[in-house]
Length: 355
Ligand SMILES: Cc1ncc(COP(=O)(O)O)c(C=O)c1O
Image 1: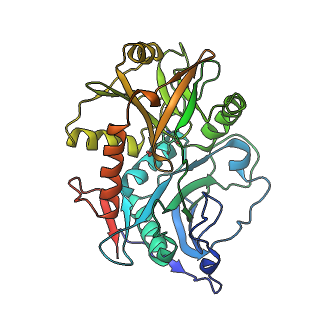
Image 2 (image 1 turned 60 degrees about the horizontal axis):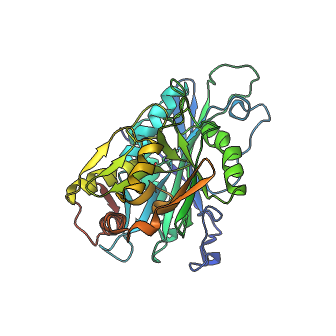
């Protein structure tokens, strides 16, 4: 299905103010944004307008009752031409977005509308895609409830929008994570598998406490026994052992990362043995004591692939980075980086280029 998208271009591009050497993360926004409204049971008024504030009533129901979901994806410069950019498995983000929407009693966005809005926006703001090493255009699709109404019920109206921001690396060092045993991010039957805004709000306080103790991030464990490793605040978790790579199996309490799935497929393609199964903190400690835990790394769209320095558990720090030279994480990271920018053939059909 094809939708009509009205395009109003900015008359004052801010692109010349961008310092490519000093981009940071999430602070600078590209010139345009895509918007479409959901009213009377249908998506209407699809438009691209200059990036700017939204005009909202104080009674906007997303603010009070939290029907708010988002996605995160990236466009990168592609080697096929000086202006080409590549999206990585964008349809997977559209599908996960609709899984979040369903759980939060929000309407589906047709995949064709998601993709058309995305492609039109990226085409228009392509010059914002950094062509510097490690740079990317971060893409933020989101939907929130717009009923002007106080009372707990699903909203009848919604806004779906996409904006973008040029970004540099999210983390630039190996991270120290704290195994979290007091607080939980998600519960069985809850919303942990969605990208709803509240999941991130609930993680802020435990993360701030961990940061006060000198950690960079929380490593979430299962909400019942706190024995089983799940994920970090915005990434999935991998342990590289001597003869296999283990990552926690998917469940209702962790996000099915698209990078996670891509790393698993890429590792298998490169000949590694990957196990998706429950992984306990005790197993990590036992493997480390036996000299069989070589690397830990985390994966996500914003972070890409980042090594862990080690993990803290019950006040004791376990250094892992000292165990090896990060061979497996380096190998799979450069395979995926090369595939994204076109330096490596794409055997999976994951890359969607826009010329
Ligand atoms: C809680 C959580 N886990 C994992 C991930 C990694 O997912 P992806 O690789 O799709 O970015 C994210 C980021 O979206 C996240 O927010």
